[in-house]
Image (tube, rainbow, N blue to C red; front, side, top):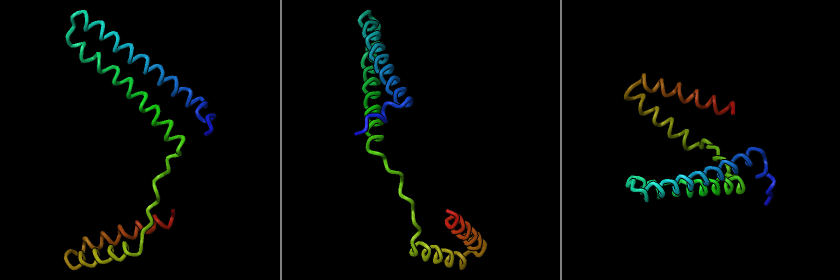
Length: 120
């Protein structure tokens, strides 16, 4: 595993942000715990909420590193199959019997779609 890619300025900033947020969230949790012990009943909920946020930061940081390491693949390009074209033609034919204006519009859209695929 090439660790150098995680030492770029962008990744170093993300590491620093994760550390700062983790520490701050734990600090806020400790602060709320002190307030709760002083008699502020509402602070008991925050005492547990802030450490959960800190754990979430760690989970997301690990997920980002794993995604980068594993090289998340881009979504596969959809290839129009001949069966799709046949289905499209059949739908247009059925619509033409019911509503000629709608069928003309759908033919126009199908032509635009096929032209955009030729440009790619």
